[in-house]
Each structure stands twice: as C-alpha cells, then as structure tokens.
Length: 307
Image 1 (tube, rainbow, N blue to C red):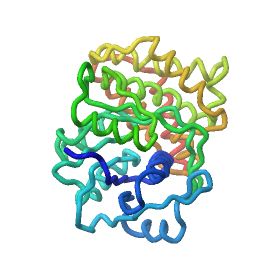
Image 2 (cartoon, rainbow, N blue to C red):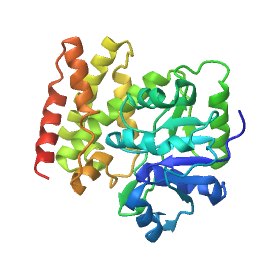
Image 3 (cartoon, rainbow, N blue to C red):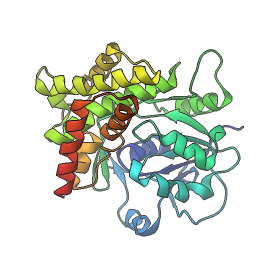
C-alpha cells in the first residue's frame, strides 16, 4: 500500500468540512474530493463551504463519476444518511482504499465493512470539538481529535494504521491510537448518549454541563447506564471513563452546541435512535433497565413529532 495522497469525504457538515479545510492546507485541491449528489452539488458550487470565514478549495465529485479511486475515504454523515452515502462512495473505492467512519454510535463500521470489506475499514471517531454549522459556514474554536485504529493496537502498528498516522501527521490532524479501540469507541458513545440527548432536550450549550447542577448530574446518570450495559457486553467501561468524558466536555467552548441540539434547532430528525435507542435495545437484550435514557428518548421523539 502506498502513501495517502488522495482523499474523499462524504458529508460536508461540521466535522467533514472542518477536516477538508485542514487537509486543503497540505494537499492540492485536485487531490481532495467531496462526494456530493443531486441538487446539493449545484448549491455548493454556487455557495461554497467556508470554515471560520475562509472558503475551502476542493473538488466536488458526482457519485456517478467514474475514474481513479482514492487512497482514503472518510464518512462524516448522519447515521440516517449512511446507506445513501455508501452508494454514493462506490466509485471512489478501489482495491487499496482505506476507510474511516466518523459517524456517531457503535455500528457504522460494521455496516460499511459489509459493503466494502472489513480489510478496508478501520475504527475511528471525532471528539473534543465545538464545531458548529451555520448554513454553509462551519465555525469552531477547538479542532477535533480523531482516535482511530484496529480493534486492538498493542505493539507494532499495522500497515493500515501506519499509513493513516503518517497522513494525519503530515496534514496536522490531531489523533490518538488507543490500545483498545472498541472500548474507546464505546466511551465516545457513552459521552454522546449523555450530552447530546440532554442538550437536545434542554436546548442547552456545553456550558450547562460544565458546572455543578442538575444538568451535569443527569449527564453522568445517562452515561452510567451505558457503563452498566458495557459490562454485560464485555466492554467493561467504568466510572472513571464517565469522569474522563466530563473532563472532555469541560474543555470545549461553553458556547458550542452538540450535533443533536443543532438538529433540533433546525427541525431535523435527530440521532436519538443510535444513542438512547441503542441503549434501550441493549437493555432489552440483557433484561436491564435504563430509565434516564428511556425518558430522554421519549422527550426527544415528542419534540420531533412537533416539527
């Protein structure tokens, strides 16, 4: 496998556009593709994406366009858009394409692997950013960190991990390679279950969870339900993992908004299904109870019905 020189991103939201802007500082525009279909492609050409007020230069690729595959494909869409995104990306995937998914939740890698092969897909997620989308402008103060890797990363790096590590170093993208990537992915899921859902219900920015009070207590309670289920699943999160998640939230700009709050404010269907919905599915699987998440999911669904 060769060094990563060409990149395609599916999804020009808060995370995808932020990464594109960073990559564009190192790679030439012709090596960077945003896979966009239908009317959205025309809208992006007429009204280009900006990040912190700066226009980002990249090539818009129609999913039907054939040609050379890319070295690295990044999925940065909502979970409800994943099926379409996979179809849109088919012509950009070749024999040696590496794929990472930055979707929320704990199941997107399995879905993408079923489409393109497990040998192409590494585990990954984005964490620690306050990136917010306002129209076609992405605004952030804190850039995301990308933990990624094989399921286990102990000892010598795999060739796939080494290639992406070199690319992240070259392009200046913050990253880490956890020893236990599955547990790390669950830790991010746990944090999202708490802060995303509560922010959507309360209409609150990160500031609500950065100080002692009812919101912070509920945040931890929702996460602890995930901790309990993780032990039944053999992942074995613990209370210290919940405390680390709180520390991450404390480090983010107080004015920042979670992706679910942004969806709620825009009148879009949220990702409650892959957060609290997954928690409730696991609860049923193990005959357990998750009362905090059950209430949060019901409240979010009720608000969605009012859109």
